[in-house]
Image (cartoon, rainbow, N blue to C red; front, side):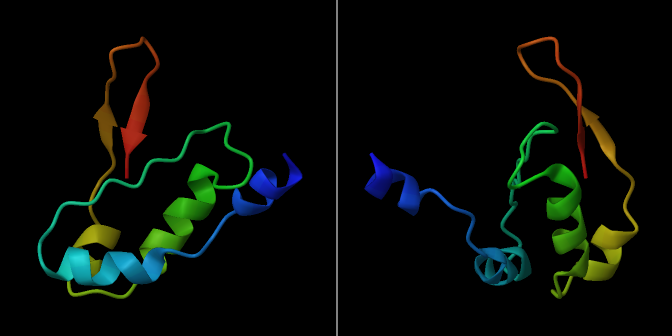
Length: 77
């Protein structure tokens, strides 16, 4: 079991996002508000700093409400 847990740790994957975003491919970055390692605030900060051709528009776009099949409201940033 210890070997399995060694594989489950956070890794930087932002370098994967730039070419996708610049190609116009929609990307969903999901992080739960109770996630300890990949929390939403850290994800938001990292995405706001990501340099790509749509960065300015993304940084100044408003957050949008989102809904799921379960009654637990969220926000799209």
